Length: 455
Image 1 (tube, rainbow, N blue to C red):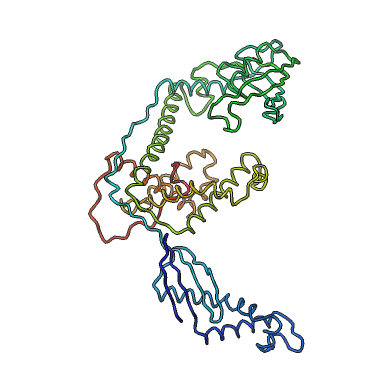
Image 2 (image 1 turned 45 degrees about the vertical axis):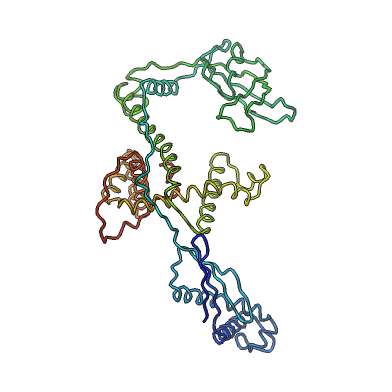
């Protein structure tokens, strides 16, 4: 067997293999035998027709195709061993030439990550702040959520709620529908912006049965899709019911109705803790975006294209799941509505997939370089924390949360979180000194690529 090796860019190897002719002929005869066992051939019992008859009936190409099912795999394994190639993912048979038979394989290798002098990177960090105004604003939101609605027989006033039929179309000539809702309850307050800013002002004064028509601009807020920003909507509204919006007092009774709190101060402290943790995570995410950008000039990452293809597969599946969850829309329906092919959709994800993949590979290398690991005690503590959130139902989910698969997921999430925290600490100049190098093998667990950006 002759083997030619060519090292390709982007962590790939091409192996061109010419099997011995004797071996090829042996495999061809075995393949013809297998074919003869599957089909009835006139004048012969199954499995008894000679090679030349099989070749006449099915052709040499069909026999070769059958032979390659086993021959290509065995040749592939032997070529890898002979050239001492360690595939990172399954290689592919990319070309078959005949007379003589030559098989060409392309094999993806383990990605190469050179962290360079990553510990020298510094990015200014501003700690997030949770103000008392933020706490009170969140408390007021919870207060409004506990409000009661009581039907009243009067005109709509600011601060009320109303059940409305709303029909809205764009005014720029294409009659495209913006909203069409029946009996939808809308809060009529100065701060309300649903369905567009200024809408509540137009509803004040309406009574049950009243109809109104008016035009309002959508505005340029980022909360609206770019395609509709700045456009004007013609609304036709019918008032169906008017409600007095009664907000409870901010007191201990309100706190007790919201959750496991005895006093309003306990609820405030819980809100403060929640906002602080969310602010920390948001700040870390924004900070790490800057750190990743700085590391581009220090870290070198090369990976085989098959990894990007797999990442794109994952992103398409995630997108498909979001469509079904948010709007009960299939991927095919989405593609038709937006006049896209699946290949065009995949292409639109490429930049994000590349970024996500590079960040995951960087974190994996960082785990090894920094000697990060997750102990069984840490995994068990996290499981107990999650079980507490289930309250009286904890016993029902305990077996699931303590399964090996779930524990492994938790371990990966915790390791990712440690890697992100360490990366931020490095960039702030606060990372601990690295321990002296040892001969110990690093932890084989790697950060979770799907969550490496958002933790």
